Length: 455
Image (cartoon, rainbow, N blue to C red; front, side, top):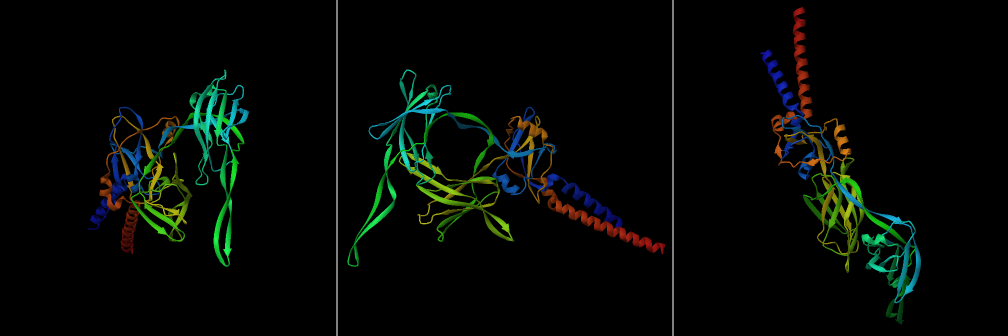
C-alpha cells in the first residue's frame, strides 16, 4: 500500500514538473504571425495597447517561438523611423545701408561677405516684445536687377498671450544665388499703452461725482540688435522613435473651487506614454497644467507630479497657434491625472485627453517558411528570458531595419490552461517543498523501523 502511494506521488510530481516547468505555460495568451518569409529576414512584432494591457507595468516579459515550439531569441526596443530635420547655418553678412522711407518704413540692405555660400533666411535680432511687422524682401542681382522673394511676410511676438515668437523670414530655395538683399520693414514705429495708469476723481462734498482712468500712449521704434542671414536646409536626422496616439478607457472630470481648477483623471492600459495632449473647444486661452501619476508611499496612494507647463491656443485674424502637449519621461502607469488651473478665468469647455507614446517591438531573426508565436501575459512575477543578443544588435547598428510582421487575434495559451496552478513559479516551489517534506517523513519512518529491528 505504501509502495503504491510512493509511486502515485512520484508520478504526480513528474507530471507537475512536465507541465508547470515548461516556461511557456506561465503565459496566458498567444498571437501567431500572419505571414512567413521566403528567405532569412530581420523581423519584428509590435506590442499594441491590447498586449500592454496584459503585460502590466513592470518588466517586458514575453516569449517568441517557432512553429515547433522552440524559443527564438528576441530584442525588445522602441520602433524607429528615418526622419529629416531642418537646420539653419549662419552666413557671415553685414548691413550695407539703412534708411527711412515714407510712410513709416525702414529699408535695410544686407550683403553677404565674400566667399560665403548663399542664404535663404533673414533673421531679425530684436529685444522688442508684443509686436507684429510686415516685411518684404528682394534679391539684388550683380547687375542691380531686383527680384521679389517675399511679400508682406510677418514677423511677430505674442508673449503677452503665450510664448509665441517668430522673427525670421523664410525665402525661396533659389534665393541662395543672390549676394545682396533689400529688406523693407513697415510700421517701424508703433504705439502701445503704458502698463502704468492713474485716476482722476471729482467729489462734491463727500460724494464722488466723476472718475476717469488715464493711460499714457508710448511710441516704440522697431529696435534691431542685428540682421543676420542663414542657410536653411533639410538633413537626415537618423532613426528616431516612432510615436503613436493612444486612447484612454475611461475619463473622470471634476471642478475644484479653491483653487479654481479642473481635474481630469483617466485609466490606461499601461502602454508607455511620453506626452498627454489636452483637447478642448475653447480658443484664445492659456492655462497652467500639471500631470501626475499614483504611487504607493508609506502604505497609501499619493499622486506624484511628472510634468508641468502651459497649454494654450491662439486664433487671431489669420494667425493660428496651438501648444496643447505636456511632455514627460517615458512612463507606464494605469492612471493619469491632469490639473488645469483656471483661477479667475472661465472654465475650459469639453476637455478631453489623448496620449502619445513610443511604439515598442520585439525584433528577431526569422527563418524561411516558418511562422512564429508571441507568448505574453505572465501569471506571476515576471522574469524575462536572457538571450545572446549580439547578432541582433550588430544588424540593427548597421541600419538593417526589421520587417514588421502582423499578428493574428489573441488566443488562450493551451499550456497555461492545462497547467493551471502549476503555471506559477511559486507553485512549483511549493510542490517541491511538499515533496521534500514527504520524502523526509518517509525516510524518518524507515529509519525508525530499522532502529526497532536492531534493538
